Length: 109
Image 1 (tube, rainbow, N blue to C red):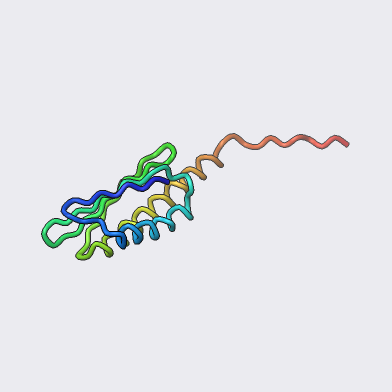
Image 2: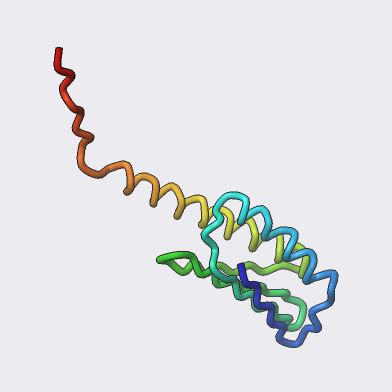
C-alpha cells in the first residue's frame, strides 16, 4: 500500500504521519487489496479538513472529514473509510456468491 500525504497551509509532522499510518492499519486489516491512499490535510481559519482517496482493485473511494483538531478529523476520516471499505467488501462477496447454482455430481451406486 502506497501512502501519499499532502498538507495545505500545514506542515506534516512525523507525529501526524505516524498517527495516520497507525490508523490506516485498521483498514488494511479488514481489506488487504488497497493499492494506494492519497490524503490531503487542509487548515482553513479554525477548521481542519482531511480528504482521502483510496484506490482499490476496481474501485476508488473518496471520503472527507472536518474537525476542530487535526487528530479528531483524522479519526473521523478513518471511521468513514473503514465503513466504506467494509461495505465494498460485503458487496463484492455478495456478488461473488450469487452466481450460477453449484452442480452436484450424482453418486453412482
